[in-house]
Image (cartoon, rainbow, N blue to C red; front, side):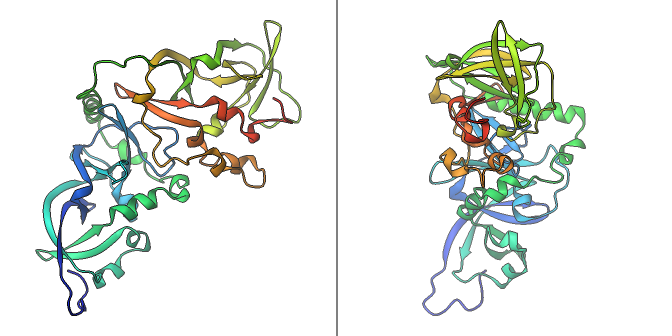
Length: 364
């Protein structure tokens, strides 16, 4: 119920809400935004999602980013369990999002009052940003979530840059058997209703960097090579690992991990690299390993959720390298391909290598 002073001529309207339990707090999600409810599955870390996201799942061939509704409300979160659920919301613009909740309880019709209840004032400032009203159903308070405001909050830079302090601990209490079940659920969800195969497409070289999979356009990859001796260069930033002699050609090896939202690599004297060539620039991108070659149709690429539209929007501040790479990874990811529970981010090396913060004195 809304505030007591609704005013003369006020006409209450009814709207359907999916009632969910979030850490013993009942919340209502607008039914028109709810696509489906899924059991909790194993999440995969995805480059470009931002630190505030728990990961993503392959939902029948499409990437679904996932957050915890408890985090959005500023509630303390207990460890996850097999009975937890993921509610899938879809905005009118077609953007989908997964919300982890403890339980989906019931679908209820709620009478909406234009004047918010006084109970809203008792919520935290963080919760008030996404709660439309607090109503009483059968004597129990229900926090009605404003889905539009929720999507807006999740696009803010501070959400992408604020790591969740105990997000990793939430999974550690699960037994090995429970973790295997979550993994099996994820695989089953990924393979459900999937098209038989991709038709056409373009070849990718799939590599691993920092434990994540990245696809590089095969046309830009000249070769994969082991550089046995890398000589550090004086007066160069730490992402420039050094020069190496590759069959008589001098190749500069660079570490792009910070531009992918990862920690810098330690200084090395040898490395496996992907030799990429963009126009007249040839460099060696340090990688962990080469995985495979894939033929992928661009029509099957999922967009990077809540991505900045251009790299310029994420331009460095005062030329500082650290500010240049904060949350910039999505500027270099043009899409994500999910297959069999594995997610591969399509790395736009042309845009990446044109980034001024990557260049040393106009040349590498």
